[in-house]
Amino acid sequence: MKSKAFAAAAISLVTVSAACARSLPVYFGTYTRGDSSKGIYYSTLDLDTGKLSEPVLAAEATNPSLLEIHPGGKFLYAVSESGGAGSVSAYAISDGGNLKFLNKQPSNGSGPCHVSIDHAGKNVLVANYGSGSASVIPINPDGTLAKPPGFVQHTGSSVNTNRQKEPHAHSINVSSDDRFAFVADLCIDKVMIYKLDADKGTITANDPPFAKLKPGAGPRHFAFAPNGKFAYVINELHCTMTAFAYDPASGTLTEVQTISTLPEGFDGSNSCAEVRVHPNGRFLYGSNRGHDSIAVYRINRRKGTLTFVEHETADIKTPRNFNIDPTGKFCLVANQGSDSVVVFGIDPKTGALEATGHKISVGRPVCIRFLQPHGNGLE
Image (cartoon, rainbow, N blue to C red; front, top):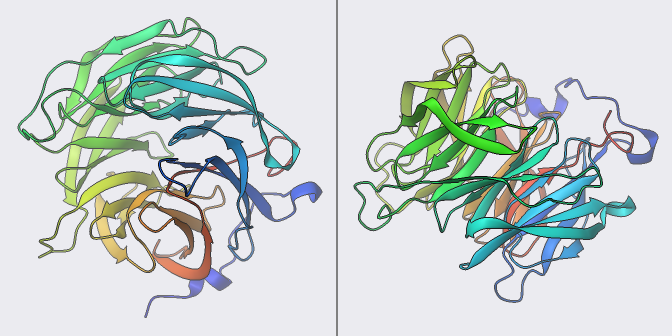
């Protein structure tokens, strides 16, 4: 029986304003194919119990699969994931969680599937899965998007002839100092490393230009440890997690470990999706679609290496995405395969997940983002 310590542990919560006492706004990106979803949904997370309020439609949109919220807390950006020319839309966040459409710009590629924002809040960065490219789109002072000046096109292929015939950029992330952008490309088995000029909105090849994964690995999503010394990539095709040591001076990633996301002996079909580091830097999480689980690891904060803790499977079905609230107390899992979002508590001692019994219905959820408000929520 897993520890129930998370329920009674004295977890240090950040100060909560009177307007949003002990609750945190949450946005869900979805696929709108079919009738179950109409766009971006909004809810609030009770930071004492883990209960989510009933979701409401914040903005109608077509396949707003991946979202990101501006560091200032006033704007939200969403891709429109489709087979043709892609775009990124800008929204103003209103009182009550509603989103007001501002404008959109082309993503300069097809099938945009991931967005991030530099820490200074100057640019949206987007990965285009379909065309295997990435773009930088400047953010105007009013939150609208300008025309994208920064663009890179990937080339190449790898050993999996079914999935890796051509490049497919699957995520884009920015270093804490906004000097580098990292694009995990599933089909060339590389994390491409670029120099980012946040003022000009451009990205150019770094030296070294990439970190190489094992042939056929299929790197998908990427996450930094809070201390900035290590980074982690989840490999969709090999169902593995790769730990890298990170050199912030040069942008270099050096592999230190690769470990399976699956239990020994598992022989079913599976693909990996999301990776997250706990805010305290002690635990790492990755999602399995097929085994339908969240894999939990303990991080050696000196070496960056991982030790397996557990697989959580309760009420999980096709976990395309999940996220950990900023206090580190709860993990929310988006079940694309069962049109739901389920909430787990996190044991502060082991990192293990424990079901809270709280779940809401959201049609085809594929992204979870917490609003960390400046002046209207968590301080």
